[in-house]
Length: 480
Ligand SMILES: Nc1ncnc2c1ncn2[C@@H]1O[C@H](COP(=O)(O)OP(=O)(O)OP(=O)(O)O)[C@@H](O)[C@H]1O
Ligand SMILES: [Mg+2]
View 1: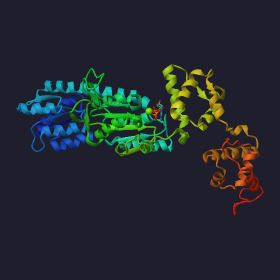
View 2 (view 1 turned 120 degrees about the vertical axis):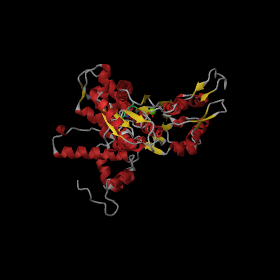
View 3 (view 1 turned 90 degrees about the vertical axis):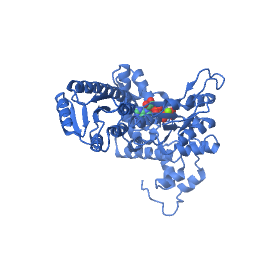
View 4 (view 1 turned 90 degrees about the horizontal axis):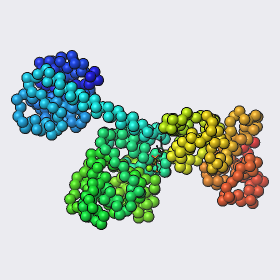
């Protein structure tokens, strides 16, 4: 029991001393405080597993201290020590969650036994908690890019609060993971996490799903039903795909956020409820508001802490460690030997657009692990659609012989990238990269850069520009 920390709070010094002696001998770590106030302060710094607490103390008495301790950490087991105190205090203390009682004068054996019982309960809880953390590992948010670091900082900050969080971002970017990370690191982590996929539940059932219903409140309501909000009481509810919620259900959710109240379908009774709401959507809610399909007041209520889940293409630096992470995960799960990626394949993965974001990458790694024949994954193992998508001849330096070739290839890649970035608007691209337009045209032609069908090159202006009609001051900036 060396891992169990005990705090003894009693105003009688000799009792403190003797309890400390007995329990230290039993290998517990013991600290003492001789008043309620000191006890609470010490409790905050050492965070003990068990507290032995005298009921009768001058000033801040045992019951008040107990209430305080339970608020700070409800998982601590508190054993009350009472003189010949009344039954009322005992009842009050049990209501507040005291673990057990010891009577003064203390009997050594009874003391040891009671503390051992409490310690066993604590150990069990700790074990469950560790198990939970391990099983939550699959919800780890991977990524070290600046965007992910920023995201983690926001998660850490909002975890400490009970604020409503709205997570937005493209499909597959990890919104659900973010919601779970907030929950796991929040003070409600030991309470429930109830997830509702608002898009998966038909409109006519969503209200009863969220708030429950009374028996017979509508056709098909054969039994009374407890709603998700009820289930999440004291915990966290995750309203996923909230953009798909019907207007009627939105009104009810608004009421929970504003008043902390819920009402079962078919019941006049209004009840108070305590839930932390995290919502997510891949829709643009501002657009939905304009269309009249999402309530503006609900949006503002939800958007207390807005969180953006960045698309993968904005944090390409994370691709190699994500690949590594998924490779570890799936090889372990399938009992496969891990495979390596050739540098060329890694290069391709880094440059791919990832419209399906991390989900697409995750699925690809799983597929490559299972389907590719060798120990190393080569370009040929990639699905065809990816090979088509990658027109960019991304290169490895060892393949390039001369300075001239290197310059030509890098120029071409740079220009292709910029053109894509500015939607193949040539004038804009030229301006942004500070290159005369005529030069850009020349490089597009000589580099054999293929423009998409809808991007227009105005032949006439192209030729007039190529004949040297530049905007003043821009000519001759590029020497090559
Ligand atoms: N940063 C990340 N680290 C590890 N895995 C991730 C990360 N982001 C996403 N994933 C994985 O990608 C998949 C998709 O993530 P998730 O379901 O959270 O996306 P989403 O944004 O909720 O998508 P949708 O809008 O389609 O519901 C999941 O398997 C998830 O585990
Ligand atoms: Mg999701």
